[in-house]
Length: 102
Length: 133
Image (cartoon, rainbow over all chains, first blue to last red):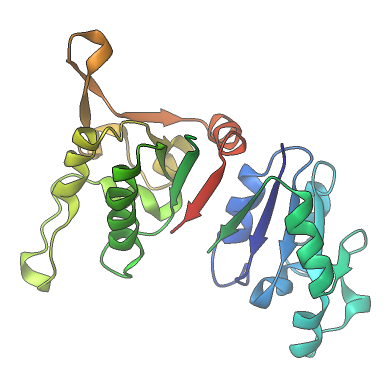
């Protein structure tokens, strides 16, 4: 039984990402979408926290939301997987539940 | 088939509509005889603060409604201890919520359980559905 967590807010606006990382258990997945993609970028204050989390969970980021914001996919933290909308759908089917961190 | 529903509350009351909407959905959902639990995390813990008084802001104080949850057999209310602690709160700052246990001669028991994050994380993994507010 695993959960797909989604975070759609910037970690600089809300604590959704840090709370999600606090509650996500081993083997779960996290998908960053909408303004949440900010959390996937290299060089932010949160980057070390995400790198550490990748020891127990798999982190994905939605490419279209990166492109829309003028961010660069080659600046995504190493190890975070970039997916498109089809990949998003696949993730929802591969997990038992989706938990949206608002 | 009974499913496990957890309502995850992470916002303070009154500033946004989330807390009230969550409570409304919980009460509606309670009519369907499912396995329901509530979790209060981050600013969500303020929803359970005692002595709420909204007279001067012209909004309805919906906090007494939480005390009715026990009558709807909603008696699993989990509060994240780290969220209380980082806000300088203890369980004594929260409304005492209770239910009557039909399996124990209707003894009155507390509904609120303060839990560590790891325990709450494990409870989340047991759910069929998690509704976030």
